[in-house]
Amino acid sequence: MNNRYIHIFSLLFAILLFSNCVQGKSAKISKTTKNVSSFNIPAISHNDSLRFKFFYLEAVKQQISGNFDSAYDLLQHCLEIAPNAAETYFMLSFYDGILKGDSAAFADIKKAADINPDNNAYLERLATGYIETNNMEDASMAYEKLYKNSPDRSDILDILLQLYAQQRDYDKMLNTIERMEALEGNSEQTALAKMRVYSLQGNKEEELNALKDLCTQHPNDMNYRVMMGNWLLQNGKEEEAFDEYTYALQQEPDNSTAKLSLIDYYKTVDQQEKADSIQEAMLISEKTPVESKMLLMRRIVAANENSNSDSTEVLELFKKILEQPQNTSDMAELYAAYMTLKKMPQDSISKALEMVLDINPNNKSARIQLIQAVWVKQDYDEVIRLSQQAIDYIPDEMAFFYFLGLAYVQKDEDDEAIATFQKGVTMADEDSDPSLVSDFYAIMGDLLHGKGMAEEAYAAYDSCLQWKDDNIGCLNNYAYYLSEENKDLPRAEQMSYRTIQSEPSNSTYLDTFAWILFKQGRYNEAMQYIDMAVSNDTTDSAVIIEHAGDIHALNDDIDAAVEYWQKAIEVGTDNETIITRKIKERKYIDEK
Image 1 (cartoon, helix red, strand yellow):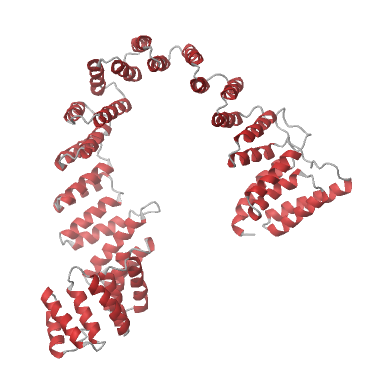
Image 2: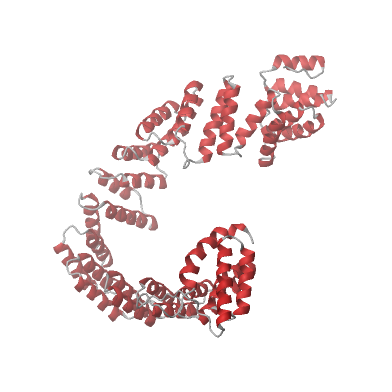
C-alpha cells in the first residue's frame, strides 16, 4: 500500500478506532452519549470472541505501525471468525476505498451501521457517504437517527436544515427549526430561518407573524422595525412601510439603515427629489458610517451606469463628498476607480490618488498606481521621488525598491540601482513573490556584469535561480556571459537550452544557444541554430548577424560568412574594426 496514506490512517484510526469503533450498548457515560469498552459481536462462541479480539487489536496495532498489508490480512481473518462484526467492516472501509473504490468503502460503512445502528461514528460516516453520492433523502434519515442518539448536538440540526432545504421539504425544515429553538432558545437566526421557509412556501401571513415576533422580542432594536418596513415595502404596503421607517428614525435619528430604506421608499413612490435629498445629506454627514456611504455611492454609480446617464453628476457628487473631512480613504479610492472606469485624463486620476495618500499615506495600492502613471510618462526623476517617498512610509514593500531601481537604470545611474536592488532583496521573506525577488537578483546580476564584476554577477544569478529556477531572462544572460568567458560551457548549454524550449522562436535565445555550441566546437549544430536565429530576428541585430558569419566561416561557408559580416557593418556594430579584418582575411578571427 502506498506510503502516502500513512499519515491519514494514523490520524483517523487514532481518533476513530479507539474512541468509536468499539462502541456498543452498555456503560453509558451520559444520557445522550454511549461508549463501551468491550466489543459487540453477535452470535459467536466465547473462544471465537477471544480470538476475534486478539486478531482485531493486532490489526489495529499493525495499522498504526504502518504495516498495512498485515493489518488488512488480519481484518480478513476477523471476518472469517465473526462475519457480523461492525468494527471490522468500519475499519475495512478505509482499505476497500483505496483498493476497490468508493462504492466498496461505502458498502462497508453501510454494513457497519446496519449491524450497530447505535454507533454514532458509523452513522455519521454513513450520512456523509449519502451526501457524497447526492442521496439527500437517505442522508436525512441517517442524520435523524444520529440526532435521536445525540439530541444535544445542534450541529446535526444545522445539517438537517440544509438537507431538507435541498429537498424543498418545508414542513421538515420548520420542524427542524423548532427543535433548534427547543435546544438553544429563540434567536434572530431561527426567526429569520422561519421567515425564509414561509417565504418559500408563499405563506405571507406566517412570514409576517415571524417578523412581528422578532420585533416584539427586540423592542429596542430599530433595525428589526426597518426590516419590517422593508418587508412591507416589498409586498406593496408602502404606507405601512413608511410608518415603520418613520418610527425607527424618531427613536434613532441617525439610523443609517432606516435612511437607506427610506430612500428606497421614495424611489418606489416616485418621489426622486426626496430620495436624492436624503442621499446627499447622508453622503455629506459626518454621522453616516463609512460603510453606509460606500454602499450608497456604489448604488448611485451602478444606477448611473445602468441608465447610461451623464457621469458629470456623479463626479460632482464625489467632489462634494470629498470636500468634507474623511476618516478613511475609501471614498477617495472609489473616486479614483470611477474616473479610471470613465477613462478620465490620467492627471485627474493621479490627483484623486494623491488625495487618497493625503488621507492614508500607507495606502500601498494608491502609491503603486501613482508611480505606474508617472512611469508611463517616462518621468524617471518623479518615479524616483515617489518611490523614495513610498519607501519612507512602507519600508518593507519590495515593489517600491523595484520601481526605484529601474528608474536609476533608465537614468544610467548603475551604482544607485545596484544599491537599491541590494537593499530591496533584504526585505525578501517566505511570503515574498518568488518572481519579483528573482527579477531583483537578475537585474542586479546584469548591472554587476556590466561593471566588470563577473563573480558578483554570477552569485546574483545563482540567487535569482534559487528563487525561480525558470527565470528565462536570467538563464539566457548567465549562459551567454559564461560562454563569452569559455567558462562552465556544459552548464551554460543546459541553461540556454531551457530558454529555447520555453521560447523556440526567440532570436536572442537561439543566438545564445548557437554561440555556446560554437564555443564547444560543435560548428554544424551551431549553424542550424544560428540560421534559425537569423530567420526569426526582426531587429537586424548586429551581434546575431556577426555570430552567423563566424559560425558559417568555421563551417567552411566563407562566402556566406563574408555576406553576414558585411551586413553587420551596414546595420551598425561596435565591433567594426575586427569585422573588417575578418572580411579582408576571409576567415574567422578569435578576439580572445
